[in-house]
Image 1: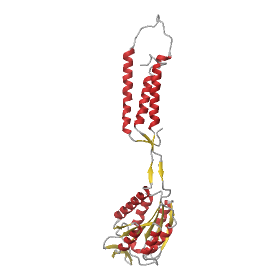
Image 2: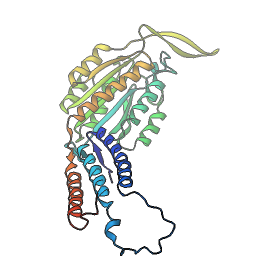
Image 3: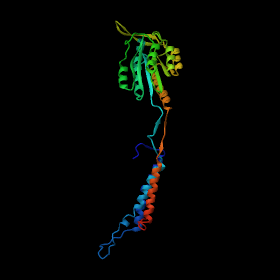
Length: 332
């Protein structure tokens, strides 16, 4: 009965406790007024003609209780919770542009930068089921691993497949960003976003990162840039005849360029130094983008108390009519 209905003041339902009290009081009062008479036999007594009227004297208390229930529901203010009005017909289109260069195998993240980035990004994707999301990977060059899609199972499987060595080594940040922009430029979504992750500085490709950022700005695309890597040096696995050996390599994140890309496009730059900070960055981006889309939504509730108030009035009217007409003298 109350599916799709919520109550503005549910505390008033405590008033329903009065109903059992009223019923107990009524039964006690009826017994006190009418009483009971026990006789050994009724032979010799003239029996009155059977009438339904005395049997219906309790209908008054029934009407009163039903009226109280309906009135309680009314003052609890039932409201329709299904009347969502949404002025936004599209969600958010997001392209993730991920660096897969050799330095992404550094193990200042667990198990390394690349795997940590994949796992945390997959959790981000799972938390945004209504958005189209795609994936671009870049190293010495770039390509689209997965175009924009709402089929996140396919996207996640393709995300899991990426690994170092799929393309020539290097760090073509500008190319990775430009490829992501190309995938978003025809989008009709209200909000278009690129999340670009890299652990280095641009040293390959034919498009400078700032130029790619200017192109993104022309298409109203926001870019959130994320620099991966601890401060100073990081352990890097090196294959030797004696097996895997680790050496310390300098962390060379071009924070100046990444900050400029974010500033030009209206996004934000973040620095991730470990798994936890990277996870927090994705959570921040998730909240920022939900806030941007939520401002176009509003919730219009419809008040539904009037029908219940009318029902209460109707029960009271029935009780009054019965008391003063058909059952006059029988109701108490």
